[in-house]
Image (cartoon, rainbow, N blue to C red; front, side, top):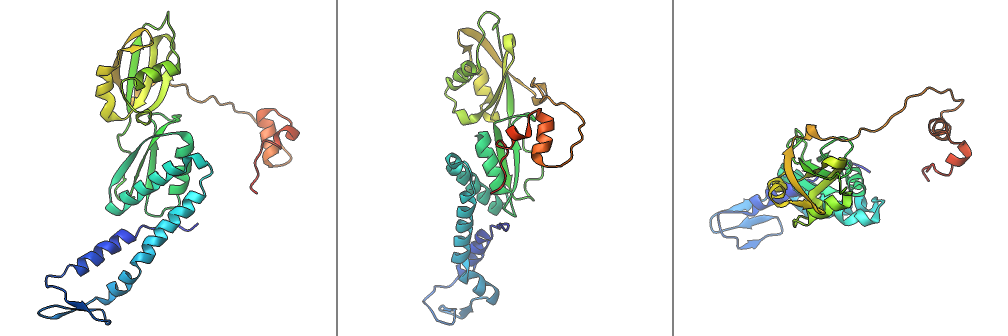
Length: 272
């Protein structure tokens, strides 16, 4: 699919500026001339062609949005992806940067895939640390989005969890119990007896620090920490060398996962 450009808002502004005349308008001749009380005003040639295509361009942008949404594989994510695309359109046309709440992995994946096809939109995903599952998305015109915005804060929950261990659901339930919506919360990183760390939108950090008092039956304290202080487990990797007769995916995967090619062939999805 060809890249899409949001040209319609600029054209609309030019058209509005053209129509905003100082003299009263009496009637419109077929020759595209406005006649007022003093002198005729001729529609500029460059805008005459532009204005005639305004509606077509707006429809084209909407149609392209529909095409992008048709490519969304996870149908449960369509509405959220549509919201992201609309946000990207506004940000690009206004030359500003807008931010989403924390997105689930499927919505983030589908949104990034759709945004890659827009010519004048840049997108940056941030979850607080490299392996984050839930991330916020910043979108804007490339000229406006020149650096990674500071849109994620990290908090630490500490307490005596040695005698009463708490699960991910316990921590999440206590956080949401303060009245915060789920989409304002990112990943929760469990730390065993020490408690947990979690990501949140920065504007709610102070509220949580004063409001979160218990997780389960354990009294806790909540403090803000730098993102670099997050204690997450990096992905485990293993390096090895192998000699294969073919570069087929099933051959390489068989060597990497130590499974037979006959078992892997049904697990590999080839493009239809």
